[in-house]
Length: 160
Image 1 (tube, rainbow, N blue to C red):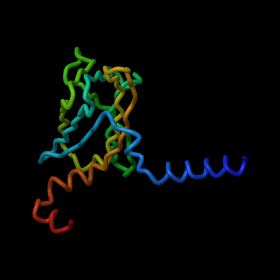
Image 2 (tube, rainbow, N blue to C red):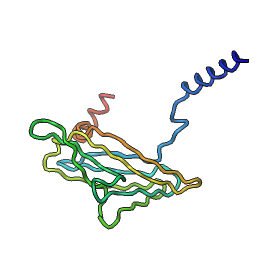
Image 3 (cartoon, helix red, strand yellow):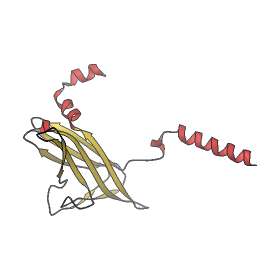
């Protein structure tokens, strides 16, 4: 009996590791960064579910809700995290997104080349049955984001 039990567990592990994890998990939130010349980063947060979603935004850096950090090079070429708000209006710190809806915010900089990374942390709740909540975190390489804006579409197609 122990041999059959070990055999079943081994087969179960083989099946689980061979299936892609995307079949078992679905991301509820999608965050994308883009760059508009000459110095504006655009952050887009999209609700990927079929239900209504609530996202809590921070008023201060110390809050443990949704955060956005840009990492900038200082004068001695060290990267320093700088906190930025995700909200447009400080009176509206709760963001409600319908299914497929996108929230967009932009950030203008005098020297955008000094910003090398961005880290976004989103805390959310999906209003579905059953209710589910979670957090989403992603780090963006802003040099790649800027390069996509500056490299013409023709050259990008040749690289692929």
